[in-house]
Image (tube, rainbow, N blue to C red; front, side, top):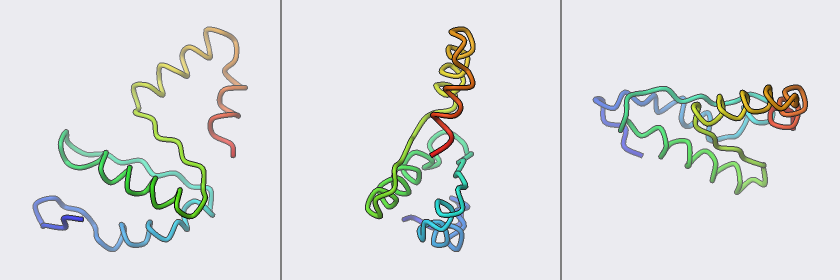
Length: 88
């Protein structure tokens, strides 16, 4: 991982999240940053790390999530979709 100061990546937070404790606490990770800042790389690393510990992983881009939610609402399956997607 590139922790150069200009990237403004909190090394301590990355190391803490790499323990997967957030999964055990049923929390999510949301990455926010400029285009090209490494959000996808970091999220993939967390996903692989979780998979190596035999956790199930879901990766979805925010625009795609909003589209899926809207489609579920239109089809009358909103509650079922939300339960299936966010309760594991």
